[in-house]
Image (cartoon, rainbow, N blue to C red):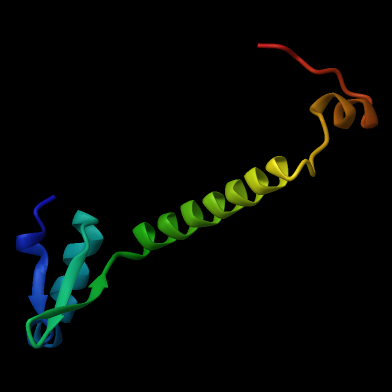
Length: 91
């Protein structure tokens, strides 16, 4: 992805909002919005935003699980399976 074609000043965004929304929905590439020559925001389609939020949520869950495992606050899978009368299937 070439961000150089995806950088637009705020004045352009104001006058071409509908066009930019169509573009990001179709191409699924973010647009960097600048103000006074500095990057200030990123315009992204809703599907990409939702996917990013879901990914972040999963990463947070994994980070919490890692901390719990490191702290010894975990239960072996065999115990969990036995509690629910399930058999562990080996790959």
